[in-house]
Image (cartoon, rainbow, N blue to C red; front, side, top):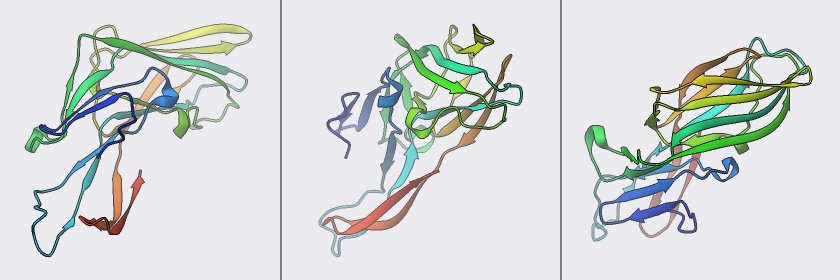
Amino acid sequence: PYYEAEPNISFNPTLPIITYSVPSDIAQQVDLLSAKSIPYFIYNKPKPIVSLMFNHALTAIQFKTGSQLPSGITIKSISFKNIYFKGKHSLGTKGENAHAWTVDQTQKRDFTLNLNYISDGTAGKDITTPNNTFFLLPQVLPSDAVLEVTMMINGQLKTLKKAINGKTWKQGEKIVYNLSSSKITQETFTLEAVTTGSANYDGSGNISYTVK
């Protein structure tokens, strides 16, 4: 199942394939999860418990303060420019291609998060929150892909630019960029979706999900 009211997702149940476009508005981006089970048949008796292993389908991107971001500097905006944003996510494939993406490389989009984050000089603080995390398409970034961060330093605007062309955003990873007044560094983590409980074909049972 999927949320039919979500305007950026279309689903082909025959294949099955999800077609997804990442919204420009960061607040509208979602942590897309996908899952499938081994084949079961509804006429089996007794009806079996169906186990689902969920996968994070996108790449999560967050920002933290770096070790050289003095107190009083204001982060005004963060932008990813010239990023692929549309693709098809295959759920029915097996092996290495299971849950794979086919990225539409004919279209690109800019993603900008406007902020007014004021640094207190402490390294490792969250600049972005769960409500404004970037959830972008896994991809090998195109040749003109750029990360730009605009800061207010001593009353003057300064823009840091980092070329990210050729970098790989992997499905299910969380990338953290650490911002300093003169540079941007990167860390990469793996995301997990942990399930607790079980559910049956008749709708009984309960499953809860924890994302970490």
